[in-house]
Length: 452
Image 1: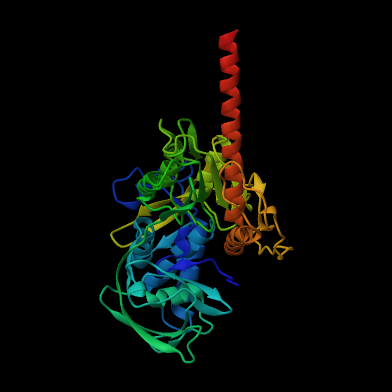
Image 2 (image 1 turned 45 degrees about the horizontal axis):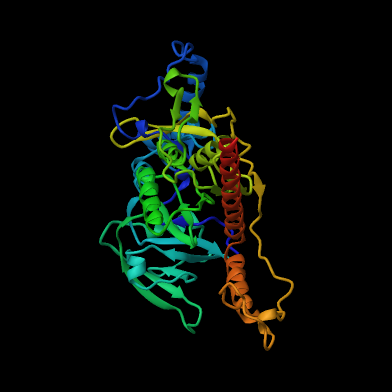
């Protein structure tokens, strides 16, 4: 069993954030951090700080330069505020921008920890990992000769990153191979699409959003067009499980894609610049098709904005388990060309005024991720199995016990792979059936009124 949620080779601690775009570059509308008390500095406390600083300079067992000590002080000051405010040096800032744009130099592997081993979840399409033939389930034992045993996921991901064009050798253990083998990969620019889609059943689509990058709103629109080209949508599953969040404005665009109007989210902070509201523009890209949104404890921040907005507008049924509960907004404020701070500047609220901070989104229907086993595995004979049975009469094909067993096997495969998607699909079918029945009743009553 995986004990840590999957991380790609560029994700880091900065992932759990609803990040306004304005903080990513100089000249954005940065919040005014001055307060009514900022005119007077606490001199006595500053003297204490100076004394501690000097004691460390003079007495610490190893010499530490002044610049490093001051950086430590800044980091400690921000970390003491909340879990999401932080100091970003050049590398951290670059990582955050990679998260936001979805582009980085690396191998293109999604990895996790299984049984204390760094394990490949999936190689991304058209990346060094996929071209080298890495497979889901491969265990990475060593990286250029360095053992990964006991190494944390974040550290392993850090080792896999590197400049474009540089090479790294992975020692792989694969099921069916008696001995580990080496694979050498050359790092390249990897573009991670945060959205993918597929058709689950005739007319029923599946939309997976793994995180909210700058282009996620446009990517959602593109994937919906692909789905609709395959047939009219009777319903859509939006999978936000294990989505750690990302760019706030992208979450607004995603929610807007399914709403005709109304508030999506609003933020409130100490400063007026942090008080913002975002509303949907006319145009539901699914034309009112029923929606189910899947969430779990790994759904955070921007993912919770989408789930909360669609839930409050009664546009979607939210299924799964309680979300993470991160309801704060971080603004990235550049300090100079190489450094920035990520500062919590506001809380966000769903259209109905709910703050999900430290509480999370509660699903409308709770469905745990479980392994389901069917009790009756023995196919029972049907009328179609009996010798000399009558034909259907309407021209329908016979459905023997063998046919039904084959259909049941397909359903069991779904249950075995992902019972939450299976249940969401059942709910969608029920919603679609009810919508058609309700529409038929309205049309019947309308005809009756005309006759009167």
